Length: 366
Picture (cartoon, rainbow, N blue to C red):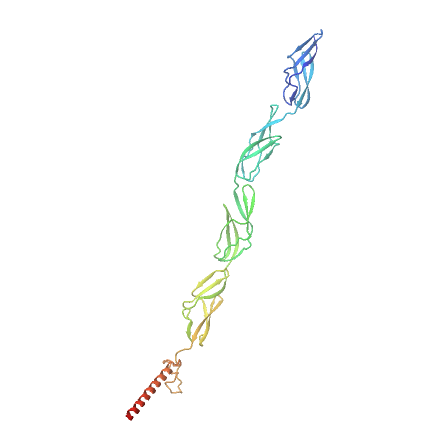
């Protein structure tokens, strides 16, 4: 009967990877019987082992009723590749957002031929700063794989005035000034941005009151309320003289043809042809000022006032109908023209008289 067995020749393979199976190819056993005989066998045994952990492991070899052991070296298994076995729940992103790996699974393949599914423990690297198809690099231990996702451009969802402009009080007819204003932009990826220019404006400051300024940027609008005060008249001037600038004392001012330029505190100007008040005194000859008033503001224009050319009523005590003052219906002669005519007539008659006297003397002498 069999009394002992031993390994007479080791198997071809004595080093293993954890989780693999023992291979007895090339192994031989020596059988020793109780009659002193021996026998070499190359099969027929049973083996028992545990290669689930790295280290030096014993393989128990049993042949019939006898057993022996063999030492085998077991090393840790190594990861040789990984792949995405299940995509994450989210595969479409907006630029600037973060990758979300919820729902993703990785398949690990080891050098011992085994596979494993993991749901966490990896590292990811990606760049979602620009739209397009983007690769997410997934690394697990010493192996990496990639996942392609779609990244679309971020969209503007709202804008608001982050900082009011320096000027929020206006006068009707002036322009809105956005110096100092800032807008806050909010995008659908949750990011925000502050801008200081680039917007469009729509407003109407043609009348006084609380006014809304509509501010537009890309597809979004917001409003800003400002106060618009009524414009005030600050000065007036005669932009065009009246047709008549010379007057006779005692007559009335004639503003026909005159135009006034009105200047307001909003920098605007206006030309008017009526509606003013005038104050003047044409009772004496000379240069005279006409005060022109409009809405509490005054300006002046200078005109010439001449002495009246009409004769005054005669003095009843004088009895001289030919007095220079004459009848009120006769022209006055104080302008000197009538006096000159009289002198010329006298000189003419004097000349004729002298000529007649000379001729008379010649005639007498002859």
